[in-house]
Image (cartoon, rainbow, N blue to C red; front, side):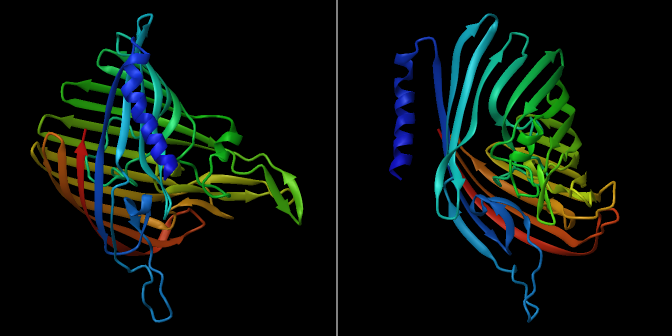
Length: 407
């Protein structure tokens, strides 16, 4: 607690003394206090002590046939409170320099709350609107088009959710914007034989690569993108108590399209993806073993493919209502499976969610309530094609009340 207090005081001292230290820089302090009160009708997959909600867990029956996961839960937290600093610096040639540092208290375990990095980057922006960004910020699959909802997960697991270190360049050409990014994992990690880890990408050497194009005119924006991820799941295998060096790699491509129409009162948005092994973006997915060398134990892999789509509409200013719907389908694998599978939600055939919200907005305050029903169709993975069969549905009903005080 003393360390946390020291860090916050140091940050505030930086803000108050920054102008005197650097006359050619300007600083804008911002943030909010946020509180989340939620209720779930059953146990769920979630993070941040339940504030970052994903989808319901499958039934687990006891000897009497009672579902061990059919337990309602509720709590209230305020550790999603946020603190940020925007920095405008001197020009370098024709480029304006800037930076952002943003943190919150959501780096949590079940008993600890700690500061974590949300954004930390420097940026150069040219007069034609092109930008070069160096540091940690939103993954380009999160992008400019995202759901306007109250849940901290922001539409996940239908909407990619990830902030990562990256080198990103945007080139402005009239109404078109071209984006290219080289992305590295840190907080949000891929699944694999050793669980969640950034080692799979580090050992694979290659960064994740994204390329996209957006078109904007007036209140309308639309775009498409392609993402490549290349991982090395293992460097060694064990066969008959002997350790062998192996050379394994899985490279996957994912595709997305998005659109948004926004006015002062009305916002319509949608995004769809054909996703392969995007577990580091909080989506369902993963990969499985398709071949095993009997001598060295070296494995070949194939990704699970998922189609995921969401749509969102909000209307209003002071009083604002909103609707959200999301759908994910497991499309299976291109090759038969012969070994282990690695990922999240691979036993889910379909994931469906629908909800509504209403918020009351004042200049510094927002108070809102949201209802979301999510159904996961669980079943058994068919090793022939990776699809899920013999399914049954499990539904969670979630009610979230939240407030923001912005400054």
